Image (cartoon, rainbow, N blue to C red; front, side, top):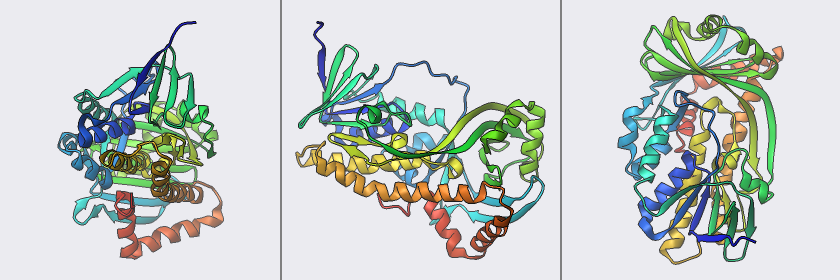
Length: 400
């Protein structure tokens, strides 16, 4: 039998997405080379081409995280600040019945920005590559063994051991599967269309979300005359969008936003993804923490998925940094329990709030239309509600 090579790291992060790289980078910027970090990225062919554009919302809490890490000045030039948010409810493509207008600022600071995911990923990857204590390997995980003092991962021809494993490997997490970490999940029966549009009028850095009975459709600024569209549609209706030509799709989107952005001149980067709800029942097991999309999958109507994951890394890394400073075990059960205590309220509140909004507005029950309109009209008429909605979206209302 072939002898497997054993490699030790202080922390193993499974998954090489944005949250995983943020965790490795924050730990390294604060602790330097005091922790040996291994990031495991599974071997796969990414179906997304370099031309694929996915817009991400960057909340003020994420901006503050980037500033504390000294990387905001690298990111900000590529962002598009959201000056104002308009939320509406429609009973048809032509009739919008109620409006909520939000000044998207908290204490005179912009509360959220839009950025191309590729740009954010590139900046974080380049910064992470500067640290020689971070080792990126490409391999597939076969098994995980939980020990009292160490956790071991069998990955093809080697054994990787550490004090702590962090599962940041997304919605279909292999770590959660192998460690039998269960989630509370349900399918939204919705598919989202994501595309990039060019239009004749300036979008004035306004983000718009219109609630249709088939699902919400959002317009996000990606430049003066370029915007991203995220359109959530009931799954039995999505074939109608998939099968129409670009000209008809252009007209369908124009019906929602023409008064704001004028005529649409081009549509590009169309893609579709399924929507579901999922929250891990626990954010840890012995010597393993779960974060990001592996811990929670929420409806994209408010664009908070990435921000929620980055708040995970703040709490998790704070605990790790504290343990290192005092010579404590970074993978101790006490440390992991504290991480869950800090994060679960935010995760549950955010996930269930957006789930409730989607359930209320994404249905065709006529009797609910007055309630839908009342909720938006009431919020529009009460300044403190508007202020708290913006603050909640900024992430600053959350204690992490």
